[in-house]
Length: 425
Image 1 (cartoon, helix red, strand yellow):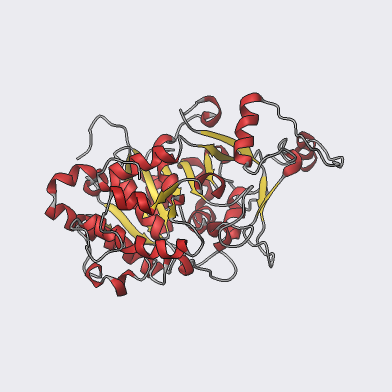
Image 2 (cartoon, rainbow, N blue to C red; image 1 turned 120 degrees about the horizontal axis):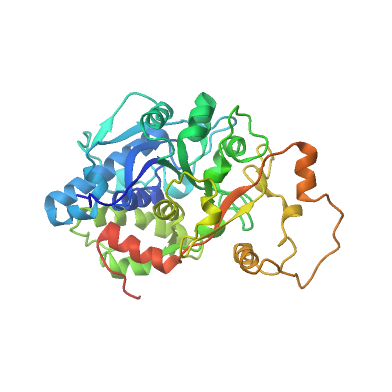
């Protein structure tokens, strides 16, 4: 069901489904540029069993949809992989510390109480399009790295980084040598957090995993090459939103009414987006933030590449990324999961404007930017001297600062997942 001439990127989808995770999964299944090798579910938005069940629900819904509308099969190329996608359980909790979930937003089952409100989706049985294994997701991912061509696989992490950290604990040499790219949704650099005033949920859920992988204090014998790590923090994902009025106009005119859509995929997404809308309305918003969907979108445009300077030497139209230097706070009473940015190395530390992502993009374009109001600054060592003094080979993390834009994402998302063309509200 895919173009045989299209070069597809093999991906491991590391997820904690989750409302936006499920839409991100639908987006991945509907993207012919990707080949979904495995879906590893972990704790995070809900518990592992509920997360696992939500993946099965999604596959059952697609099958039911295609039974009724076989002409839509072309829309879900990853539903018909020659080698069935593996679904498996990953980590049940963080590397250290207390277990936290985002059930306050996603509901106890991860999909806004869908089992209680829509029992028609609570169907038993394993969809035949998936491959089921008893191995842990960590072992499954390591096995795929051994079997596949070196540096061909992209690991899309849209939940806590615990699974990737445990892979590194088990065989850092293998992961560092053979993983092609990691695309991670996580962290908040220059904007407020969404779980605490300073922390994004995925980094809050397991700051130890994020720190082990991304900081200069990595504990692994073979640290993961950060040239192959691409971070999408809240700074860039939050502006990408799906307005519920647009969803109602374009996808489901009966959204939030008793007139359920006849199309199973639409009925499924509307059933949990209703809960999401009620939650967001409490915060005076009428849109869903597309955090995890942006990560899948990014994976389409940034496949693995044998040259580690790919991020620097190859411009992807509409996308920009710059390196940022930071550490992650693990144990603070108020700052767990906070990305502590090394602003002494940051030329925009005193720059004006509320959106530093835009300032960073401006800096990259013009190579210089002067602040209109410079407070007194203390003398600090240069970045080069600091690295020399500490023997530090840490050169920062690539962070996305620009995408082709929210409207572009909405157009491709609506067309691929729901088969509709975007109309203005």
